[in-house]
Length: 354
Figure (cartoon, helix red, strand yellow):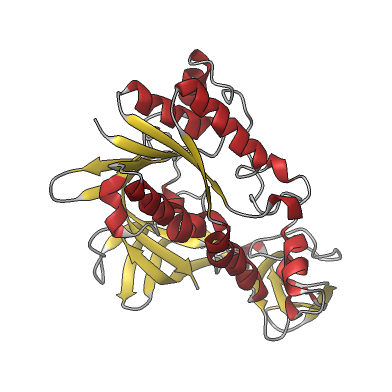
């Protein structure tokens, strides 16, 4: 059996992942990452990576009889995730910090620490599968369609794949909670954290104001316009909007309006009808491939948001950028979000929508 480093956030998923590995006879080491300074943030204990999470992870590790360590990755997390999050909103885009964390901070650090601790594998509680063979390791969607988290892992460095274990990949959330209850784990009925871990107030604009200052173009008033240029309203900062948004646009329209685009250079928020929200083409940058990338004219599946279904697409061009023609028009194609490319159940790779 292997010596396995398990990332434990203090939630039920990572708790059960650790328990399953112990039950399988592995030598398990639990670790929790300290990603930001909790004392600077109100209600800091309630986030998935907060102090409550660390204490819950320690309790579970003690119950399982495994060692538990806390790794301070605040500097890397601030640079790779928080600063990127702020920069993306400042440029009119909508980032996904969980993707950024997995791609740039979490797994790289786990691998480095795991090697230092003499571990053969690293594991997390993600609902995704991994298939190891002598020639290749491939990443696959989780079997539970409602919990599949493959969308968040397209950015993993390819060299990390052979080290990975995902014990929950074949389970449903209900099965995981039931296992936690049977094992009498303290996290069995712990609710899932819904907020961004470093924005526990629930309003990301609080963080933007703190980082950017009140006098910043992204937080200053501007115009709400139609695609024709007609001014139909005003806003208090384009960073408060994302593609597809309905709320905050004011009233007086003959039909519902949605955000179609953000123009940071002019501080304009472009709005239009639901029909105008749909697009049939997407361009993707900052590409990362977990296996051989597709060629021009290849047919693939692409997922454009976490909860959105994957849709059929054709590769128009693939060089520095990837351009896809979508088999069916999709709503709210949002710059900054991820486009994840699949072949059947396998994750081929992905990138950021531009």
